Length: 373
Image (cartoon, rainbow, N blue to C red; front, top):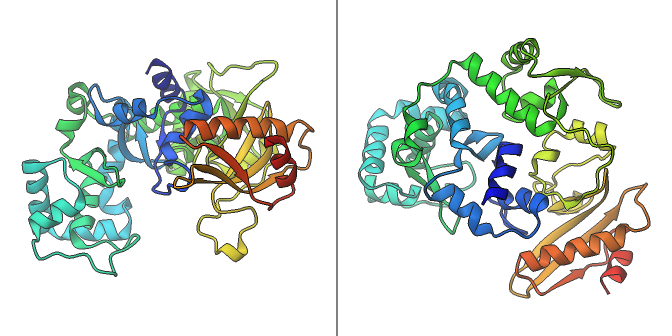
């Protein structure tokens, strides 16, 4: 748990996503940094006391430390004007909001379906209620969640959010602490972002928590004046950069990791391209016939370069880690297939799968299959 906590402290957040073709998105960044860790530790951190992670809108839906949840209260206060349109619309349903709030207070933690069943016994979701087209009770819950009046006590095995009151989820010292003003809070978030990045442009730093450009710019100036950000020049960056004063600057980096599509290292696509020369897009929502590299593609980091990418899927029934496509970057070294094969074997073991199987798609597929043999 000390290793898990140290990694959370360093990267600041774990993005949540429902896609489970390989593994849940929030599980993978810790694997990339720690290797085959016990995922029960992360589940405990996000659902048991002492609670080390809580859920809110950070970089999309994310797990953040409770202290960071406090820095996001300004966003909660702006729910009526900055939440999604479907969420904002629920603010006008005052009677429904009161009923939903009362049910969560009485019986939480509850799923949206459980709340709907209690508040509206005749409610039956139909085919219209899919994706972001939520029924009224779900919209009400999401408005209350966005505005901070309720929060998440964890997720079910089906990945449904469990809604509860903040005072029953957040540590007492965090829940009772006075909320910082927006200026102080955004400066705190920028500093967390800078610590996670090491070095980045203003665009990188504000994207980490999806911060407003003007307020983020003022926070950067404030932190620079305090010496908490240092001006830096980075070859390849199209704009000025900022470095956190505690960022490490090793002469050489030796590392190897598969990076999930929602890994913090690759959140900001322009930074990824400027630093690594690696053009990357998530193709989950692209029609299959138009995908270039695959559905759930993970870049492969080897030492200081991104050298390949693989489209991965967990075939749980067949106990196979399926490589649906494998592609090498133009300057990938000769040892790439062997290194990637070893990393895939390790990931398969962590996922509880018995073997790795490579399909013949991509310019690296044949060499990777040979390395695995």
